[in-house]
Image (cartoon, rainbow, N blue to C red; front, side, top):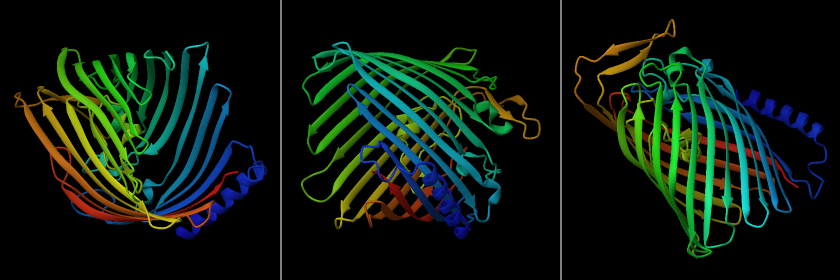
Length: 424
């Protein structure tokens, strides 16, 4: 399998190089191209109580474009990956990740930006039903968003945001999770200094579930508080705290929650850099896709259902240091807590054979709660052999406790890869 993957990467490289022969020579060309090959050996690929191991090969081609022209900036990225499994080849898939953004300063005090993305990837086995981990369920995610800000460099600024996204699954069993979401926000920003600003403002989120008769629609009213602080040249802090009120389904049931995220990076004058990321979110928080902690191709924090009263809290700690000018190493710890409080007397499921949705009424209508924890410890080493060639290896240990939706499991994974970048 590894030999076939390397041969496929070499063929792809030849095709791409033939199509863009000037990439390696034009000094002012904003393009770059990266070819990568990765092999992962996982002792518990399906994340189940009865562990089964497998080797996964990921061969990818990625192109990047970045150009600043006057007061405008343009960026785009396209990544295509071929993912192949040694034992569980029914999970073989081709993934893609496309993104583009543009920003501009105009008039004397305005800034605007627009971004779009389109992602296709296999739903992780641990996000499938416990009795059907090998389901080949492909997730499609599309997003368009933007911002408009008045106030550039002054004490006060007003920021408007909008976002529209769609999430769809290929398998009938997951059609109840298909969703369409739109959000709009308005924020007042106070720039205390060039290094510190505070923001406050409302944000409205509306999520529709066209194939889910229990929820159908959820409306969220958020009051956001933000802080962005460049403490020193060595440390920065970014925080979002949101007070949320959600209205769910036809019965108008309301759920209150406090969500948000915090990121802190610190690089002292020594060799070690530190990072902290804390996130508390519900399923309506699409920022999980951008801020989820990923290590050796495993998403360590993913929501597995559309119960909007499920709170996912994640803490990720990391430390990295250069050993030499070409070798660096890092250590990461991740902790995720899933909390679910079911205070409704109706649940929803899907028939596997027909894909039709049917409602089942619980015999116990009282509230019930469930929680579980996922922990991981990871160590990685990177070797920049040349400016255009990099090699990396990682080792990860993980452990999940059980709840009503997730089984108890543990395991480890070894991940090694190499990448070649043509970047003038």
